[in-house]
Length: 227
Image (cartoon, rainbow, N blue to C red):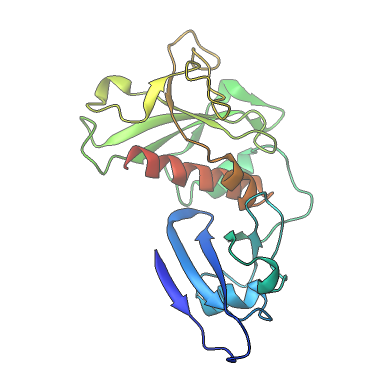
């Protein structure tokens, strides 16, 4: 994690905050800024703004973009797409099309589409750590209520996995962040869940835009499988 310092008046005590890219958890920076500077300006100066339309979120999902640095001293903040008022609370087919830009292998499970709400989709993600026979994980992502509950990721090609780090039998851990089930939803097939850890605060903080949240979740799962 890199540390960036900004030159401020000697009469002002520098404020330290950690900025994390909500869609890429590996991009995290500890910065020092003046207390009268806004969070928005700090993000721009650190060159972490994804575009002119972005928001910054606290660890509990509160928008803090326009707050003064002195109000968030010592906190970890998440930079992501601008929060959009309203919008769908479900993943729609249009949302799948948007996600396919970054995840071209994504496909909705047609048997689990209800009133244009995609409750499960499949996607192929890379294996960068040589833990599979063919160099990829085939995943099923179950997301029946993504606005209120983090999705669950299941490995479909479990037989191709040579080292099963962070892959466990579904519905068995008892962790409060484990929403998995013993059987793959909609089937009688045993479920192999990717343990996502306590990612839910970050998932909530990303945005209230469902596509942005699921994109962040997928990037997190890719990171977990390759860590």
